Figure (cartoon, rainbow, N blue to C red):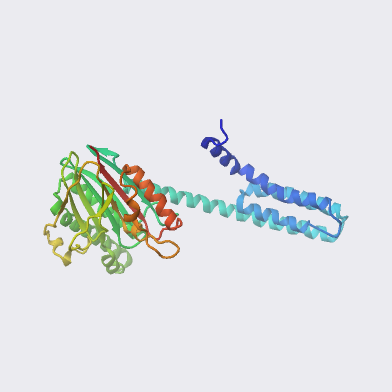
Amino acid sequence: MASGDPGERSRAVRLWRHPRSITAMMLAFPLGLLAIEEFTTPDIRLGPLMAAGPALAAVFCSPMGVLVVLAVTLLCVAGAAQANLQLYEANFVVQMVTTVLIGAAAMWAAGVRRRREKELAQARWVAEVTQKVLLRPLPRRLGSLEIASLYLAADDEAAIGGDLYAAARVDGTVRLMVGDVQGKGMDAVEAVSYLLGAFRQAARSCVALPVLVPYLECSFRADVEEAAEAERRISGGKGTERRMQEGFVTALVVDVPEDGGPIRLVNRGHPPPLLLRHGKVLPLDREVPDLPLGLGDLDGTLGGAPTDVDTVDFEPGDTLLLYTDGVSEARDEHGVFYPLADRLADWTGYAPDDLLEAVRGDLLHHARSRLGDDVALVAVRRTA
């Protein structure tokens, strides 16, 4: 097999990171000092420095690995003392006791670290399961449409945040939604679950696009109020006001006919989608932006008033990109926003999967892999 084979490199990395390999590297520290001790004058005493071996091992090894390093370190301390003719001096006993105490503390620290690592792994697993439950994978193809999606969490320890996407089939039409919940943490994830549940129920009920927003508005409001009421009971009247103030979501809903025809859009305070056509990038802005979901009592949506729907031609070869503001508001080290539309001009001919992968790599390079907000992207392309 060639030396540059990815599988070979992967096996080499796994071997390098194996606990036994790490323990062997930690053993090299006291053994190396002992070898140096053998070739230096008695005036240079490296025995006390060997006590750092178990402390270093606590950072990388298991408690058993630290114990092995401690045992070898004690032998090396004794060997160094013998080389310096100090084996029977009182200072040698002090060195041995000090090394044992440091080793015991290192074993305890390694045990604590291992428990924290297991807790973190469990938390990551729960986050991954939550993401799979809420953000279900989108179908790669429906009729003449190719679809791809991407989610990047700003928090390295989280798999999902306040951004969302979803897709459903409604009477021969693919209905796509991308949204961004105001706020962060578990409250944002809770709001995501409310909106996605309402969206899927609306698809099963074949709710028409003009009345979809009132439907989502009422359902989302009801879920927020129920959660606020439950929190009020638990906390003795606290928390309701906070929930109602933070309960809104920017959302974009697009109906794309599977077998041809124009697309229809409803935008509730969300960044405008981008239409990629013949080397051009066209933002589909609304002349009068609507309020986000959750604020329907301010524009009559909560009372059931139909929403204005925009219609745009969607030709074979066209690609529509839906995204959240985590993309457009990503900054580089100089505070410059990511120029999404400008970068897309070079990728208008890409398939959805390749397009999102290009955006992902370029976005992370622009932001130096430090995203300030979650990112959700959905690309849909009409084939001939």
